[in-house]
Length: 321
Figure 1: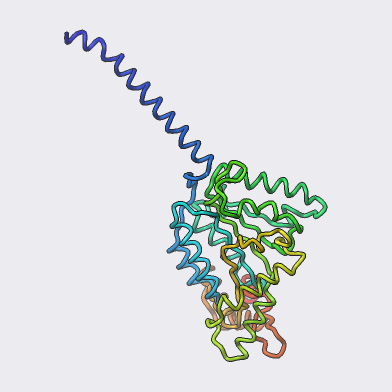
Figure 2: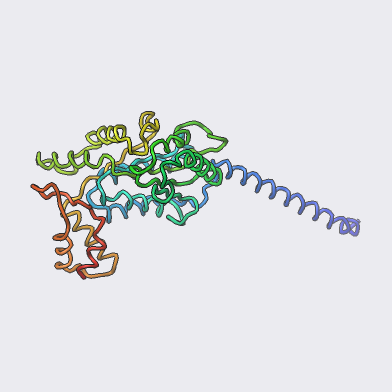
């Protein structure tokens, strides 16, 4: 009897192995299916919100509203296991105020590969949409690109830079992806993040900040309620902005309009010191002062705000070392 049992053992082992392989294959197929559908696949999405908060606190100068809005929006979105729509942020402000810097930090602290992650997609009008006459082809390509990448990974980040230079009408193809429907073209897209960057509204934000200064109000007293309406109106009234007649603003598909305030002299000084520290260089007073003295400030009477924010700080430091 014992001999007979030993004789049947290899067959039982084989059947068991086959069952295990079959179960593994089934599990792989289900995982692949769920990943392709985009609702469970996290890809290289590894959010480090404490790290992001620390970096913003240390290096983003003069932007109390932007810091608060970005962090609040991200925390609510990341902590929601089943968001009803993708996170859509629109960053606005004068040149050099930190919009591109914040978008790069989002990629760095949300995805393991940062800006090099295959699930972070950066669009530039000059590189990707240079010819307005090709708008119909661009619309078709953009729709397929977004749909295809969301099918591959629901946790994708899409960055659209220089919205002021996008061909009008292009963004309307994104409208179905930004709302709260369950699926679009067979793709679950509710865990995606869309970031739009533009200078539109910068003049209006600057004016609000200038009036606050003239009224002896603290900069930190400027509220979102003061800025959001004027920025939204600037988008709607600008025929050169990518959202022009797209329905995205009108249908309230933006989760947050994030204003970036113009930078004053002490903010530029902060940028200089931060850049020197990152370069591992001593913060010599003469270098810091030389960079500040070479920076243009406006308006002419008050000379209050940097005309280029902190955008040219790195190149100016190199001139005075």
